[in-house]
Length: 359
Image (cartoon, rainbow, N blue to C red):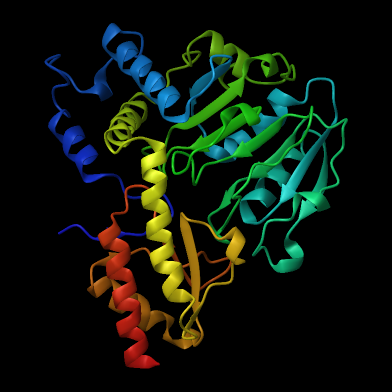
């Protein structure tokens, strides 16, 4: 029996994607082999990758003057690769600190440049997004970096910052493909795939072509965006099976009606859970209402001594991975695209029952 998997990542995949991958495991489209076994330079896999890129471009309406790269190393690697590929002759980069993932990006970037923290929500214990009017942007910065959804703190940008001539770089790992975005407002978007785009092992990088000539001389070829763009992401062997799975997820998203349609479902799922949290004092949701994440709903029991009982009861009721991150404690329900509405409905019903029993 499959559970409702609320993991923050690697996260739940659509069941139809899992079923199709299983059916094609031994023999992909009559080739007599698994995608895992294909040459990345053979016509079969190159056809798979071309379609994956085309579908992603359709889903996000990616302009023609942007390259799509399929890389490895996750968003953690990109924390280093962003300054390596974006600094050029500049020595300063602007960063907005909104939580644990922002801090990781900042710590890594400091190995390569001077990092200016132009805004921070540390004073609210990372429960909000700093208002744009408070940002102290530097016009000489190589780029401005943000993490648009913080999975640990459960906060999300509901708007796109304007940074003028300085390119905006966004880590969208935990909410890419969950909402409509205007790619043209960003210089670079990067994301680990294991939340909404597939399995761990694949990193998506979307970069405006006029930014591809900024890499530092020390940048390794496998992580040099310009070299990877010129080689169709095949400077080294790409994560072939993860790319294939992403393609199945993209096909599933298109069948749902695309990103605009899935966004409506995500709004409804998040509203169901937050609306209940707003009616009770048994639980509390720390994130500021206007900055609440649709993907990662963080909440705490007022009586933390009940945490173990809550998690045990949830698991018995068919719900798993609800424990909050160790950095903040409490609970976290990650309700990515693949989480069905029924999963959120089941969680809310259980939370009400648990409150009745222990409140």
